[in-house]
Length: 307
Ligand SMILES: [Fe+2]
Image (tube, rainbow, N blue to C red; front, side):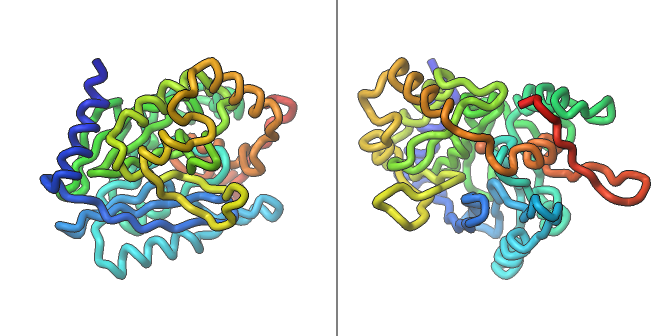
């Protein structure tokens, strides 16, 4: 009996029936990292939440910029919204989070899944982060448990633990909508890789099956899109029904061994994301950049021959 999933289904059904408020979603797409950042707004109040923000980063020069985050912040300020949550679906390996910068500007509680501690343990070791780096998730204001309910104004939300891509991945069901992070991509692109430390294809399959048990009309917003031929425009919204009918990796009828074999074969061909090392290093600390050294400069580490 999956009580967390049943609660999520109930929230979606009550929203579809008009009993609960339906979230308005405004998406910002970052073409450098192919990331979709979602602003989720309660139509009945001024409350909103930000999901998976991006800090611009040029690895070659080591320069960070807040252009994308500034655009997002202006959107929220212009609409006079109150930011209640800054949510991360997981510790991203392909872009730096702008969560601390946005929080300083807009307020709100910064949250991620409670299993971020497992990610911090693994990468704390890889980056030899030392005792100053707490591995207890205390860099975040809140750690979500599976099945934990939350509100954005009058919107009802529930956090679901969906490990597989990483051990800490969360999906957020809000009203009639699920924000899947990297657990599901657009149907024609499929699913995310499972070969990072702590990733596991069979675990991802089971997490996806939970999400696919949501009502078919549930709106799905993904965290990344890379397009997929013949489609040449970026997209980030689909439905559970469309995923079940046509997701190229996990549509109805694909069993676990078939998925795992496909995923592991494909993962073996993928190179590391360009921004893997800076991203994980910063995102395991909730998006905080490393402390400056005695010359006032912040440095990122590159562990050699480790990953
Ligand atoms: Fe990811």
